[in-house]
Amino acid sequence: MSKKIDYVWLYACLLPTFAFVGVFLLYPAIEAFRMSFLDWSMTNYLHPRYAGLDNYAELLKNAEFRNSFLILLAFMLWNIVVLQGASIMGAYLINSLGQSRLGGFFKVAFTVPMVLPGMVVTMFWLFFYEPNNGMLNYVLGHLGLESWQKVWLGESQATAMGSIMMKGFPWVSGLGFLIYLAGFQNIDESLREAARMDGASAGKIFWRIDLRLILPQIRLTTVLVLIGGTQQFSDQLIMTKGGPGYSTMVPGLYMFNHAFTYGKLGTGSAIGVILFLLKMGFTLLNARLMRERG
Image (cartoon, rainbow, N blue to C red; front, side):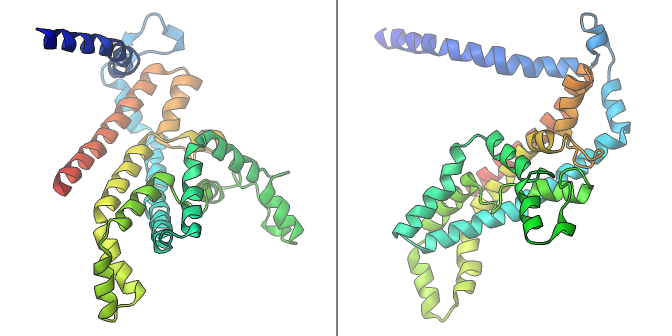
C-alpha cells in the first residue's frame, strides 16, 4: 500500500511537467495540423474557412517554395560534407595529442563555443560581412584588393550562399567534435600499433582503421544534421532575409514569412506540417540506424 502511495505522489509531482508539455508543445503541434486545412489569415482571423488541401496544392504549384528545398539541400550537403569533415579531422588531430596540455587546450577551445547562443555567432558574421564598415572589406581594402570588395550578403546568389556557408569557420561543430572525439578515444590502441608494425602509414591507419570504426558516429551525426537542417532558418533570416531575391530562401524562412510577415497563417501551418513530415522521416531513419547499431 505504501508503494502505491509513493507512486501516486511521484506521478503527482510529474503532472505539472506533463501539463506544460501538453499545453505548450503537443497542443500547438496538433493545432497547426488542423490549421493547415483552413483558409486563415489576418483578414479573417476570427472566422477562418475550411479550405481542404488548397494550401498544400498552392504550395506545390509555387516554384519559389519548391526551389527553397533545393537551396536547403545545398546547405545540408555543405553541412554534411564540410562541417562533418572538419569535425572529424579536428577530433582526430586532437586525439593524436593524447593527454598533453596542448590537447586539453584545444578540447576546451572547441567546446566552449557550444555555450554561446547561436544568435551571437550569427550577428558577429553579419557585422563581418557588412559592406561599408565590415572587417572583411576593411582588410581587403588595406591589402590593396579593392576589386575583391563586395556586398557579400546582397550582391548575388553565389556570394550570399557562400557567405552563409563560410559562417562558423573553421566549421568544427562542438557536438560533432565531442561525438567523434569519444569515438576515436574508444578505439583500441593495439589495433593502431599492429598496423604500424606491419608498416602502415598514418594515412592508411586513419582511412582503414580509425575512420571505419567511427562509422556509427558518422551515421548518427549525419542524421542529426538532416533533422536539424530541415527547421533551420535563423542564419538566412538575420543575414540575408532570404535574398537577394529568393536565392537563399529555405522552407523554414518561407514558413516564417507567410505566417508572421504576410499573415497567411493557414499556409504557414501547411509548410510547418510538410517540414514536420520531412523531419519525422529523418527521425525514423535515425531510429532504424540506431537499432542496426545496437
